[in-house]
Length: 583
Image (cartoon, rainbow, N blue to C red; front, top):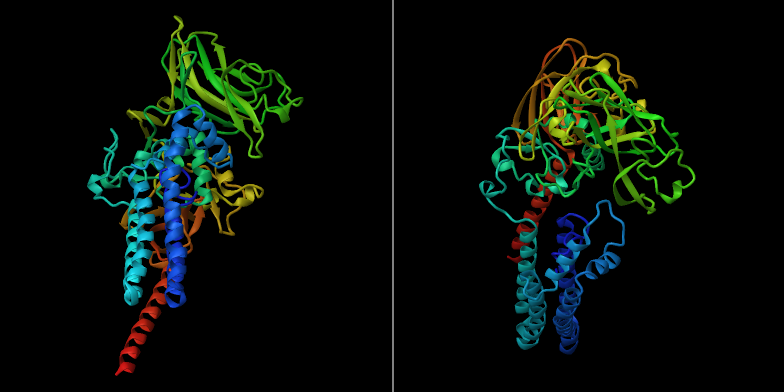
């Protein structure tokens, strides 16, 4: 408990419930040891085994904590390096800022920190408890057991309350973002920088997060959310009418007058992906791009990998001229690159999953227009299916040299309605119908995961759906009908009712997360729930109008209820038997 403020230790790189379990397990082991000592341990052994280690540890911590804190405070520049070498050397999925670790250490090592003081007080109470044990004589077993049970209960309750504080929903911050109203569904872009809205901080205002909340999100959820972070076209998949983004993001940069986020592209993809169209002012004489290429090391110099379209004219985006390979200076690519290095905009450190460090690059391209723009649209189209084209920033250069930056709020389908709030007018309905002929199975790409398939270029989320578990779904979709919205009603937290109509055999897709505990009935008859688009739910329906009820009834709940009932009956039976036998 001395390191509660230190990132990583507060949850042992797992949710808090596992730390709670560890503390509870240690308490149980301590209770077993106490029982053994009370049964056969001599008083001297009890004093040595019980009081001495706790007192010694307390004395050592009282001496060492201020010393360690003084060392870190005396060397502000070297402290992050120490944290990086001793604590952050193990690679993790999400990097942790060394300065954040240092701040946690300084807080944990401060004797005035309430949680640190409480931990030291518990050590002192432990030593005192053993001294009292020796002093009370023959009654020590009863008194000491009550004391230790009470001490453990207080510790566990304090521990649990800190991890799971409670407050009225009306008191939950923050204020509702401008432009968002009760009943809306929002998508966080990204949750890492919008922690003030997690977990479900907007529930008190009647606003739901499309990502939901789970302390242990499934791998598919992590993969799909990560893909959405770099592919704005995937915003539509989450059925969120609004997208929230940080007002002052930590990765915000300005290069050559173009404002952009270093880790969040606003357009691009592999060749075959849908073009990204941005609304623009008229009169620009050039377009300035901030972008990069991935998987492009073997693309020859000058070969087009995408196009910029303005005024109906296509301008090529070429390898080695406008943009270049992101990992151009990666040591293992030395001698393999087939194009030159374009003009860099930003250099930053990156590493491969295998641990190879290198300097990555974003590039700056100035594309001169044949004539001043008279079209209010700028289109970015990836063309090479083997190359990932990422555009992070777009700037329109006026005749006087001034630059107008385009962002997500200028992209077709998105509209900025307030600081950090975008309205997504092209989001899929939460419940909709698509013909079964327009569905496809994972057999379309048998060597890829479901999330890779549904986020791949060429998948039109408004006209196609990935269905898992239905043997009738083929590998290739046929047809181009748009998704038809269905009428949805939230009956309760564990039940959703949908009214849908179809003219041909179809799927009703509900863009709520799937789980094996969800069951479905179509017009009162049991129906199988399929996995749609890697994470959501679908049922097959025939032509006509139908009522579909989704109810959460996991088998584990039934088994748990039966076990609890049997245990309760057994406990009552044993109690009755014990009372009757005493008579």
